Image (cartoon, rainbow, N blue to C red; front, top):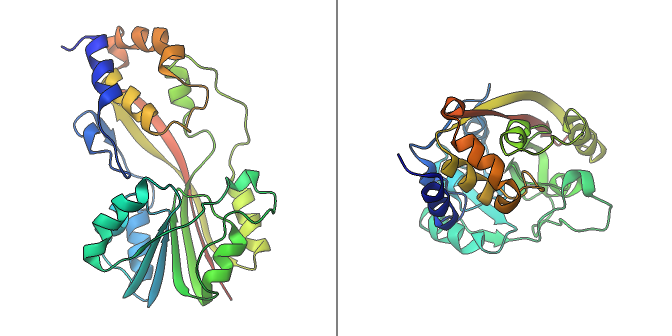
Length: 258
């Protein structure tokens, strides 16, 4: 069995690009939400002529989508991901456009950041998985009758991991779905569906956990390996904790433009 130091050393140098978590295969499992985002998007894409995939990451999810609109465009705000997505999506005829990215939905102050570099009414479908969005911009680029579908990570998504790495769970609202609903309604969209759910995860060893937290650094802002090393070592030395579960909370929101 690998030692704590061996697992940590491996996790700290393991490669990562785009939004590809394949390094965790066999060391982490992800369960199902009450809905399938991929199926929900594919179902709507089958009847759409144009589609925008906001925050495509490395294009992984879009490339695997069962059905795409005949004219599909991807956008991505994090510069290192743009060439990764372009290489993956170019053979599929999907252009990737770098945008400026939106501030987190609870930090938007109306200063204009988060503009989408597309014409008004250009898309029958806008899909967004785990990407901040300015609702007014989404509404602007949607065609009349068009649909916006987004899956978001909700509040308290990482509470179990806070405890596992020895950090106090921060106080925060139960969910930010009410804020998202208000924002899309204020932008003139009509809410068709809104549902919350939890996705079960398991980490088989401490190296998998450290790799995950290294990649999703925003999940626990107070985390660093140095700060949490003692708690991580204690967790490693407690075999009854593994596989270590956590439940990641999400919500799905679907809205249309009149």
